[in-house]
Length: 78
Image (cartoon, rainbow, N blue to C red; front, top):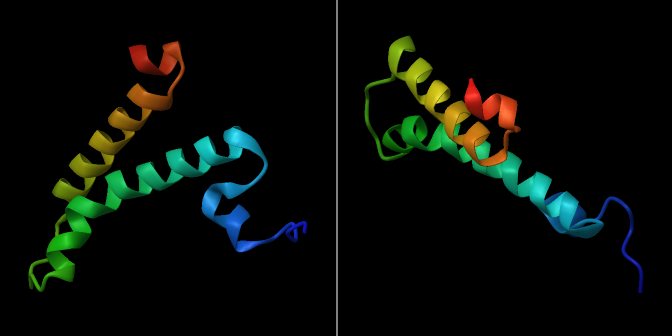
């Protein structure tokens, strides 16, 4: 039985082939890198909200890690 094109499996990265799964995984990992450090303290009840400085540092670090793993040779050198 064929699944519809917009099935939950495809949305979860189980679409056509390994390229779709790799793209989904890369996107999910990037979101985790940018959010987990900032979001977890809030989820666990911290009354403090991060200022712009820690947010900027987390996002820069996430981009650096993401490009190291998935970037081209040119982006890895920058």
